[in-house]
Image (cartoon, rainbow, N blue to C red; front, side, top):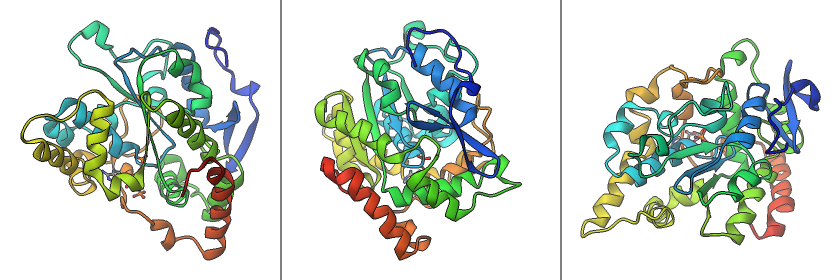
Length: 317
Ligand code: A3P
């Protein structure tokens, strides 16, 4: 996809494959995209020009995006508890291709240059680096990427997809989900290529790309919140640093966030044609849930793939 082109990408021009039932994914630059987002992703790639002060949260779906959204928002805006209690993290940090570039080449929201009263804006995206390289490389914006154990990501995705409105009639068979995750069309997949795209950059340009795993965050949220604040240029300061950080960690914890009425609601994301309830972004919030679903053979199948795809680059999972 050329950044300069203004033509709208036509679905009929793309390779497509079924991922289950009658549901198809479309292939762009080696990645599998939901038809609902192909054109908005194309618009983001062609028209989104991040400001140097922008923060982009990138992720493969179901790897901890919602958590990172609340953390980044809290780190940047500090006293965010009140907002988090009444607004879903996905409304506080919108997804470029799902909530912003949905209908036209113009973003659906105002930018800091027009409001002039924001320190910075935070956006999120699931677009792989391989498709967004020109956009991200031509800006001084900072990028945070979160990833997660592939087996837990798969399980979380399976649960999530089965909460969609269109799956009410026909749910996604578990064996198909496993198979497609390993070797086939999977939304925004292949997972491994998505992760490696951002991982390599974080090693080459650590001052621009911050890479963190769901598990690292779970195991020591405080340390990573402090590192993130440093990376974003807004370190915690003062005599009560400990207290400030603890406050952020607590207000973004699964226990606290998942108990806010807004996050328990069946409402769908504003501006998205995709009907996904707010509460589907909070399920269990645990490490290792795959053990409750995957047999030894499937675990070995995914582990072998992980060794092949990640370990050669020195990335462990
Ligand atoms: P599970 O389905 O394993 O519970 P995403 O935000 O990228 O869609 O990822 C969703 C996953 O993150 C879900 O995982 C969800 O429960 C978990 N999650 C949401 N908020 C969280 C939080 N504050 N802390 C830890 N995990 C969280």
